[in-house]
Image (cartoon, rainbow, N blue to C red; front, side, top):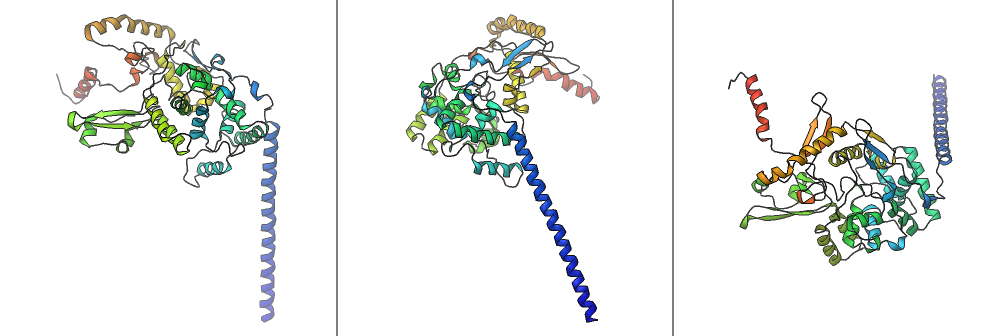
Length: 441
């Protein structure tokens, strides 16, 4: 009996050993397969890398066109004429500091890739840890914009990392910062810090103040949204005064769920006389300046002076040759939100819209024809018109204000998209509901 038990035990041990041998070989095979796959992927990435030798002579990306329904051009996104290259010595030091503060405060310490930030970004991407931190350095952002397509893929990310390391090995930090600042998008076809400075402030980039540098650093995250010529120059509070007074709200923290982001901060006053309260809401520029202060790029006095200057700034009036400007900016913002600014600005897209340019001209003429009469007789300074196809809901014409370029009437605000009191226009709906319930008038 003991012989049989011993024999059985040896047999089981042999089977156990064979099983672990099989598992070991399977694991070795898996590891070998993974290494082979990574090797071939890296080989495929490396052989398709673009040449960065002529990085300073990059050809500007192809323009994207917004067209009407018949192919007429309404607007060209990313025109070469709006880009001017200037040497780093002709760019204000505060411009680079502001960009580093909000985008990459370790720019001069890393070698093109911040691997700690990259791993945190990967961790967040796979929901392993709770983080929203981005992993791209200024070098990576430049590489992505200058050499690569806007697609989101692991292959593109691998190329971005390899090219960033190559770029850092061939160029100094100041040279990379110069290239980045000369190609960064600021919206409205404005590319590069020199053109942005001339367009927004009417001065060369070497004369930028701390406040102006902070404004420029705040824009590229969403150039259309934060454009000084768009609808979001200032933060907005999406809660009416009556409700604010009823809830006795007295600080920005209490309004956090009712704030629409904006480029600049703004003070809102609620209540009257003794009970009046001022609530300051921070804009994106506030966070840039706060970050510059935290990093000791500026002093407290410089921070306070720059914030006051930024919130009181008057941008240089800007005009472009745009047909149906309110409609074009509406379409552009929708596209940017869905596909990203890189695809829109660099992809050479042809975007056919529902707008009919002939109906747009008729709409413009209709608004112009009544504008002066409405103002003189009724005191109405603005007007808007939107024409829809009742069967499809397609927008055929859109006039968002009496004059897109007239800031005295907030002309760049698209009144057709802003919430308005319905007034008597709602009566047919109310009557229809009553009729359906059997009420007779």
